[in-house]
Structure formats: C-alpha cells, structure tokens
Image 1 (cartoon, rainbow, N blue to C red):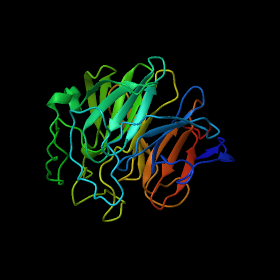
Image 2: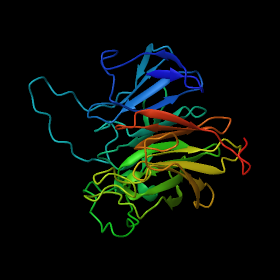
Image 3: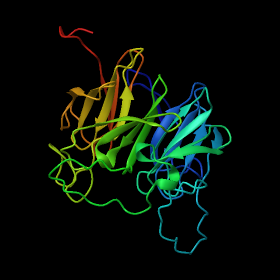
Image 4: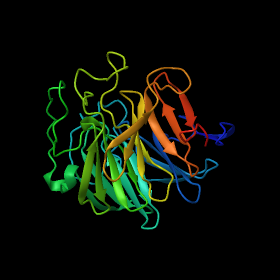
Length: 308
C-alpha cells in the first residue's frame, strides 16, 4: 500500500503478501472519513480487510467460503446468486454509506451477478439485487450467452462482469457493468433508475476482446471504473475504459458522452490498460494503469483559454 501526496511524493508504504495472512491480490481500495483503509481482492477466498492509515489491522469482513484442507483439490466454483453467506470469488468493487453504516459490494468480477449490501460494522447481510433491480431470487445462475460482437451488446436483464460500484452525493448507486458496456443506476434500496452505454461498439465479452487501439487480445468491456466530478451537483461521470484506453466524460443526468481524455499509448497523457479513475476536491483527475502500464497520471482541468 503506497500513499502519495497530490504532487506524487511518496509519504508512506506498508502491506504486501507477507504483511497479513489475509492480504489479497489487490483490486479495490477505499478510505473512510476516519482515514481507515479498506482493501479487497477478487481471487478465490479473498474478501475485504480494513486497516488504519498506518497499516494496523482492524477488521476482516469475512464471508469467505470454507477453507480447503491442505492436499485436497478445491471443488469447482458454482454460481449462486441466492445465497448471501459467502462471496464465492472475491470482491470486484465496493463502496460505503458511512451515515447509514452500510457497505455496498459488487459480487463479483468473475462469477455472480449481483449487488449486496451489508452492515458496515458487523458484516450482517441487509439486502441485494441484480441487473435492472431484479430480486436475488430472480437472478439466473446460468452462464451468460455469447452475442454477435459486430453490434452492441443486447440489453440483458443480468449484470455481466461487475467491476465497480460508487455512490453519488444525491444517494444514487452507480454500478460498472463491464461485461455489458454499460453503467446502471439504482436507489440505495435497489430500485432501478436508468442506464447508459459506454462505447457499445467495443466487444464487451467473448473471443474478440479489445477495441480501437488495443492489442489483438486486449481486455473486454468499456466500464472498468468511474468517478464523479468535483462540483456540488457532480454534473459529470468520468468512466475509465480499459479497452479503448480513454476516460469518457458523461453527463450524469442524461447519460450522454460529451468528451474524453487520453488515448492509447505510453507517453504522458496517453493511457495503457486504464483500470482506475478518481477526482479530487479541486477537480483534478487521477488515472491508474495496470498490466504493463504500471503508473498513475494526474490531469488538471483547464478552460478554453488553456488556463485553470
């Protein structure tokens, strides 16, 4: 875990595979109002763990499947969107509502197709839903069918390859449905509000992964992560598109794409396999690149005259 200031200077570092026995293959990080660090992973048996800002272990969210005894072959993973005791294949993304003390989990990047809400302090399950606000009992446990990637993905009832979840200031829940090239929006109780598509000509899943500028066998889907703009109304959503190596700027109310940042490449201002995006209180945008990108970039907003 590396902590930097906004100019890129390293302030502190802690963690790693030998730091704690539950340390995951890092996927999502969030910091609460008290400065505690929450970390999740998407591998089998991984969950969410919580530390102080200095790296002292505080809490394990748990909800893991039973451990496999040494020397035994683990049983194959089986999709089950109805049980709520375990997170079968880790946590794709999470966010929390600190006023309500609720933890929202996108479960998961590889198997299930649902959002689950838990008590932030005890880990007790509270509610959940699927794509378009389906009840957990209605979500299919069958594999998602392929589609003709020469056109946009069909408007499936289910999520496919969830990759992030974020809550806006006005209390709406935004879900990154990467395997469908779309963002779906809900109330905190799971009522479906709307959806918008992000560059749906990009293959969302299947053998023809990638998009313009990507390698032949690049990543699938366009909605890897998202962040809200810094203005009080959060007018825009910034969507990290790892297939097309862009940050799409989307009008939050209409869902219309109004601009973009970046393009495929390794130079400053270009992106390679963007997987993370964030915005600070001053409107600066930060991007994180995985695979061989291995860097964070900072973009400063400017007006039409080129000044801040």
